[in-house]
Amino acid sequence: MSATNAVKIENVNIWYGKNRVLKDVSLEMPKRSIFAFIGPSGCGKTTLLRSLNRMNDFIRGFRLSGTVLMDGQNIYEDKRPQNLRKKIGMVFQQPNPLPTTILRNMTLPLSEHYRIPAAQIKRTALDKLISCVLYDEVKDKLNNPAFALSGGQQQRLCIARALMLDPSVILFDEPCSALDPISTFKIEDLLNELKKERTIIIVTHNMEQAKRIADYTAFFYNGAVVESGETTKLFSKPETELLDRYIRGKF
Image 1 (tube, one colour):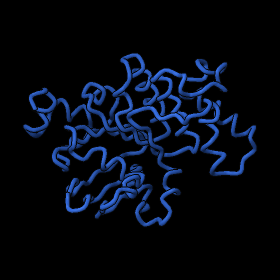
Image 2 (image 1 turned 120 degrees about the horizontal axis):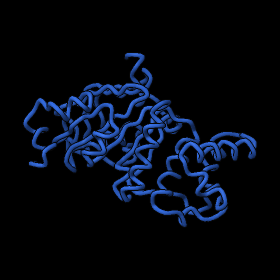
Image 3 (image 1 turned 30 degrees about the horizontal axis):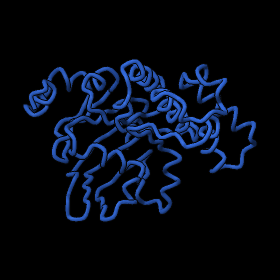
Image 4 (image 1 turned 30 degrees about the vertical axis):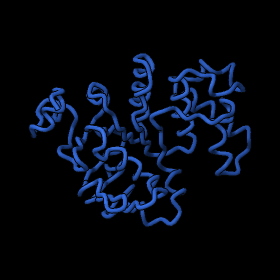
C-alpha cells in the first residue's frame, strides 16, 4: 500500500444474505484529502462507507469479501472493532447529539475510553469546539442541552465530538442533506480545514458540493464503481455516458 494512501479497498464484494450490493470495488483514498462517493440512491455508497468502520457487522446476513486496508492493516482481521473506531470517526446524515449537555457530549468519548484528568479532557473539548468554529457560539451555553442548538450547530458539535479521539479518517454520510445553505457552507469550510491533517470520505447526492470540496470522486451505479479519479477531471471529461448523463441530470 502506498504511503500516501489512508485507505485502500481491494476487490470488495458485500452481501446482505443472498443480495449482493457491492461488486468488485477497488479504490485508493489518499491521505489528507476529501474523497466523495456519488451516485443514485441504493447503489451501495453508504454500505461501503459504513463498512470502513465496520458498522455493518451488526446487520444480520452481512458478509464482505476482499480487503479493506487502513494504514496498511486489514481492518477486518481485528477481533475488536472498537479499536478501529478510535481511528475512524463517523458523522451521520441527521445530527445525533446525545441527550445531555453540550460539554458532556464532548467529554464523553475521552472519559469512556481513557483515564485522563477531567481538566485535561475539558481543555481538549474546548480546543475541538474552537477548531469546528463552534466555541464562540456556545461558550456561554456549555451546560445547556445539546438539543437546544440549531441543526447546523448540532452537526458541527457532532464533528467536534468525532475529533475527540483524534481519528486519522472521518466518514461523513450526507452530513449537509438536512441543513440550510449557510450551515452547509460552514460544514464545507470545516471539512476543507480538517483535510489538512485528516482524510475525509463523504457520501453526497449534491453534485455541486462534490465539485466544490472533493479532491477525488467515485461514481457508483448498481453496486459497482463506474468511474473514479480526480474530481475536476471526472466532472469535466466523464469517460462513460452513464456518468455524463448523471452529471447533467438526465439520469
